[in-house]
Image (cartoon, rainbow, N blue to C red; front, side):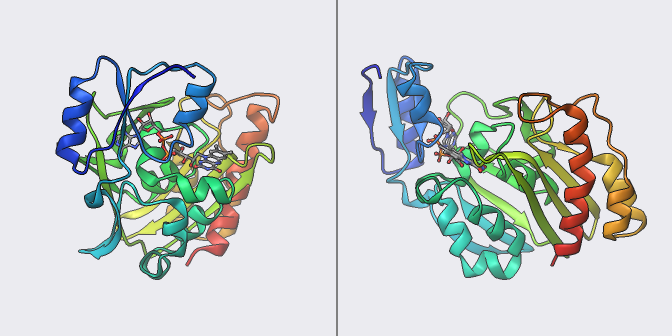
Length: 265
Ligand SMILES: Cc1cc2nc3c(=O)[nH]c(=O)nc-3n(C[C@H](O)[C@H](O)[C@H](O)COP(=O)(O)OP(=O)(O)OC[C@H]3O[C@@H](n4cnc5c(N)ncnc54)[C@H](O)[C@@H]3O)c2cc1C
């Protein structure tokens, strides 16, 4: 690991200021994705700006038509929250199955979304539920946030402050685990909302999380496991690696969507 200057601001404004003054700085949240890249010397930031002491970035509350989760809220806190369990149990369940205990106790929702790993779980929930990402500058709709592998709509120095999730009628997340990493080989989040059915897939797309329009169309006709399973997903834009071919991933998407529909509540 290379040397870096370490900052621990107490407000978002001070965090933005610290990053703005750095030659090549980075925010650090739970460190679960960033620290391994530093240890492997894949990144060499001059400064790390720790978001962990900023009270305004923490917490979960019921708000308007749904719930709002602060960016620095850990996966374990989301999983254990009675507010989340009551409004969107699928989201609590998703958080409860991220990585292992250490990852869940350190990793944060803001860090996961900013990182936008193509196999991460949260992006599928954010996209399927039509969530809104709040930053220190603006609000970004989920459909406009994810821009490709490890790429988002965030600008340099922009901090995610919170995520607002509207409450769906029903939802569920089904993850086919890649056992070595515990990330999703394929993960499918299905949400039945007032505006229709939204289905988001992680782990399978060459460009990261995406909406499975074929499955959405099938479920728009009938919200049943049979309808989901009968949908055909093209393998053309899917990943192939040593863990599974593109055709295998294409096969898994309707299978997992069917399980999600059956489990949705
Ligand atoms: C062994 C292992 C297994 C895992 N399994 C899973 C899994 O099953 N599912 C899953 O979804 N994830 C998994 N993860 C990833 C985990 O969820 C991480 O917590 C997450 O990807 C990053 O969150 P973090 O808080 O640790 O962010 P960090 O690692 O601290 O930061 C990640 C990136 O986000 C930026 N950033 C952080 N917070 C903000 C913010 N508020 N605003 C703007 N930028 C910010 C940082 O600058 C950095 O570039 C796993 C990780 C490990 C190590």
